[in-house]
Length: 116
Length: 111
Image (tube, rainbow over all chains, first blue to last red; front, side, top):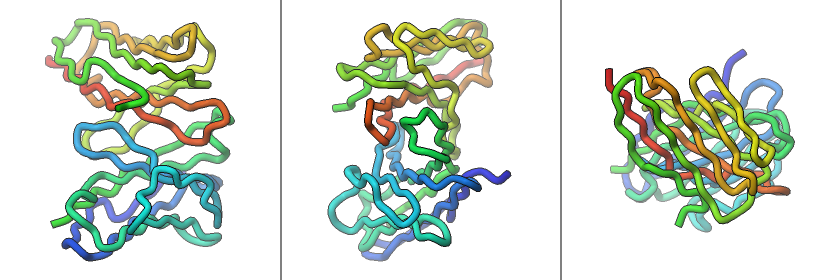
């Protein structure tokens, strides 16, 4: 039973390029959460998605960032025209139900984005 | 400013000593979770507390949820080098759908 799979583990992009981060939730999980972590800090919520729907994107920057969770395939976090400040670890978590139902959210190993 | 404040930010102790990490907020949470994160890895859930005043024990780890559900603590007895890591608290508000994380406490247990 594979856990939450994120790829790539490490991603280097030049300023102005696009970054695509993928997250395959655990089998049977239809809820996905994306978080960003800066060095030596906690995790900051970005977006919560269910299959084909964005439920809460209150933590997403208004520009350049977008997320999707299609009916088939992984969830994608897309960052257009990356800047140095986007360098961070991006974590995805999945759960079988909505977190308030006291179900555990399992985290992936993260994608470490470095913008040079 | 953080909605959840963790203290201390960094703690270095010798093997065998005890330690306590605090997680405080002015907001009420319906539940609170504690995670441990190791370098290069994602956070791993240790425990969830949901009832004010609740105390949960996990081997040498004791977790407490404040009566008013605004704060929590994690106490480790006789710490071991394997306890080294970043400890994160995360709160969930009633009717909310996302975890709000504290800034983390980095614990180093020296042999």
